[in-house]
Image (cartoon, rainbow, N blue to C red; front, side, top):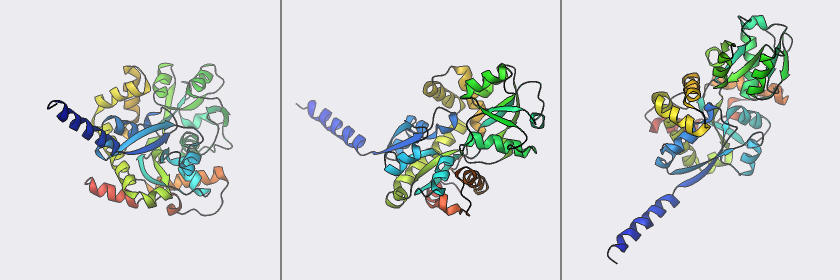
Length: 316
């Protein structure tokens, strides 16, 4: 009996500590590496340190509706959050972990510059408010091409399908994220431009409801802190992040290394939302949603809690 009692006490406190964690649900669209911060924060114990237990829920196309209904607590895609807020959904961006999309414009080897793509056919996702399709338009504009007039877009499906179309000569270029940029170069294609080297366009971060911001600001702050710590880990711990990518994305070491090296520079270390980049997201979202009125920064973002989180982490 004397031996059983301490064991029962330990078991009681263990269950109490687990039950005491606040459970949150965070939606993300798919496996691309820019959406790993919260999942990594869960794996490395950063969420637990903040009294949180996270459940990552993969959703594509319905995340904002799920946020509005309360089925999820947070969403990782900033572009979707901005577009929804512009259309009246009570949602706000509260932090950014990847302030520029980690995507590249990749082309057949006979093309030496982005300008060479004029008059050609480019494989792309369906044009919308998502970061990849917006990014390809902004890359073209950066090099003086009008995406509406100077090139032809063909919706060719996912990244492997787009690379296959290029191989067959049906398209001459496409947008690729890691590890498909690496796989594309192994196929003999060339990278003409990297989006994150050209402009800021907040991609991955945290979007939540105005209700959550009002009723549970401390929870929002704790999640931001865990995400920032995850980003700092990603930047500082190459090997640990590579191992995480291998496990989470179920890829071999070669692809995990290529993925890490391709995206690591796009993660920030403080969760900040670049205002000039967010303004670009707003303007692109207005075009897609056919909103013509002026949209203020405060209509789509609330960064007051981010400031508190940064101060508590010692970030100036």
